[in-house]
Structures are given as C-alpha cells and as structure tokens.
Image (cartoon, rainbow, N blue to C red; front, side):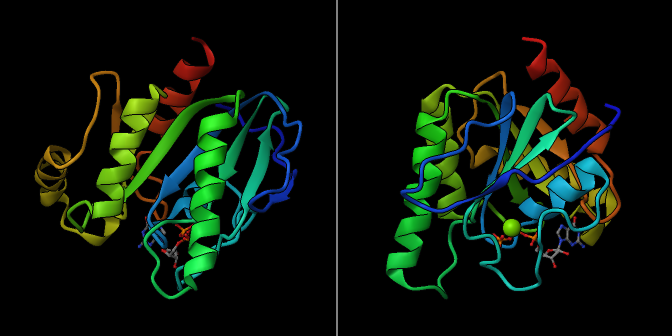
Length: 195
Ligand code: GTP
Ligand code: MG
C-alpha cells in the first residue's frame, strides 16, 4: 500500500470515551515489549510515530494513527508486564478488553508474538479470546532477525500448536527491525479492507 499520509489522532486511557476515529481500524495486541509500537512504525515507514522503548510498559493508552484518511492503526498496552502495579495492569486489561469488545470500526487484529519464545499463558489466553470473538486475526511472529533464518519456520510451526486459531487466521514471520514480512501484513490489511 502506498502511504500518503500518517497522523496521530490521540491517546485514550481506560474509561475515557474512544474517539470518533477515521475509517476501519486494525489493532495491535501482544505481550509487553514484543514490538507492537515498532510494528506500526515499520508498517507506515515512520521512525517513531508510535513511541517505543527497550523497557516494557511503554504504551499505556490506546493510541490511534490514521493512515491515508482511510483506516487507523491502534496501538495498545501490552499484557504480562509484572513491574507495574496491579491496579494499573487491571486498567490496561480493561482498556484492551473494552476496545476489542466494543469498537465497531475494528475489522482486524494483529496478534504479535515473539518468535524466540513459546507462547506465554497471556498469549494463549489472548489467542483463545480472539478466536471466540470471531474477529479476523493476523498472527505475526516478530523479531525473526534475532534467530537463525533456518529456524524460523520450525519455530513458528511449533508455536502454532500452542495457539487457538481458526482456519481464516493469517500467519506472518516478521521483523520490525528489517521490515521483513511487511508486504505480507499489508496484503492481509488490503484483503480485510476489501471484505
Ligand atoms: P509496550 O508498549 O511496552 O507494550 O512494548 P511494545 O510491544 O510496543 O514494544 P516496542 O515496539 O516498544 O519494542 C520493544 C523493544 O523491542 C524495542 O527496543 C524495539 O527496538 C525492539 N524490537 C521491536 N521489534 C523488533 C524486531 O523485529 N527486531 C529486533 N531486533 N528488535 C525489535
Ligand atoms: Mg508499545
């Protein structure tokens, strides 16, 4: 997809009403530090429109990034980060749940996992919840630049056994660092926009 225009619509915390939005929405969900914000930057070719960090717990709100005035990427906080207070974690979980459950504009969810690690309990739970929601999902295995090329496919097929996916789910090996997999994620987004 040709990116003509990317902007930042705003950030929304738990219990704040979500914005009116711009077109259809694609949310990025996954464990803290897996690279959700980095994926958005890589997809739109902008270095730091979504703020990233080496330390987990960077994204604390739902952040909306309209693309070409046609659809939005929605960056969300991660799950599974133990170093924040229980109440803060509960607020993030409520924000993610309410966004996924209530947002009529949401047409696809990018579920991001780290190719280096077996899916966590949080990854498995999210996968099951997404499946039950009936939402269209693209499972993206990030950080493939961190493992040997020859291991990518076998790792992914092992990890897939631990996830609860329906037959429509797309699976993409990805690196936010090198941009590998970007074309496949764009192809999925295009397909979702044309449904
Ligand atoms: P939270 O907002 O804290 O939940 O994290 P996040 O999932 O948004 O992760 P973020 O994009 O902030 O990235 C976390 C760290 O991983 C940063 O240091 C990124 O540079 C790094 N990172 C993300 N994707 C990749 C990748 O594909 N390869 C490598 N090598 N590093 C990556
Ligand atoms: Mg983030």
